[in-house]
Length: 288
Image (cartoon, rainbow, N blue to C red):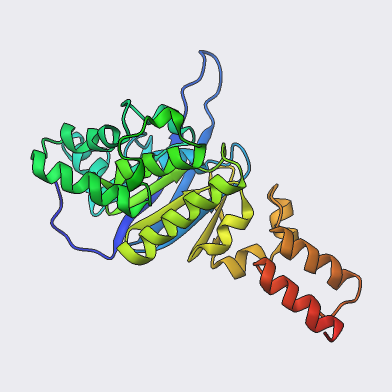
């Protein structure tokens, strides 16, 4: 049953445990091991972690692609394990996956974006409005009548995001959605989700292994062996060079450079996550 309780949380996990099926005779391992996490509405959260850390498994619980072995996942107060909540959970939390080709289902861009609302039984006039608005939101309105397979990787991901937006979600989860893209494509997708978060108020959860993408978030969560290992602001997390290394991750290149300079005796701070801020730190240290 859909809860009427209003909350500032869009997603809440409590003692979340998940195990993938194993062959007979093998011992199942917890891919998620007692995860307690709350995602606030309107926030931009980046989830980091090495391969096998549980970050993508966590993402798939956020719109009921996976159901907990034990514990709970609540989306706007709705239990994802309750079958009657499934449609509404997936409407409120949209997923964008790693390979956009697996998410594009039509031969024309605007038809692909319309696919989700059509399946929900949305009236034709409203579908037209949603398609136009969604393509405009991701800066792809001029490609409405193009064939998706002719677009670049970054453009395809923006079309996939538009298809999710057309379902009017409150939250978008991007599961390694920039992993297959070149730097220009990653920048396109990051610009798009930043706009949706800041201008539209859509909650964004970005699962990634690109450390520099975390600098633009409100909050960074680091997963390790199915548990939350670190949780804080980008500045709090990304400047902990040794701690990140212990978790199989590298700090952003700017932080690594400043960390090396500090080790060589330079008077620089690690709290420069962007290239511009890093350059300013070095210039000040040089007296320029």
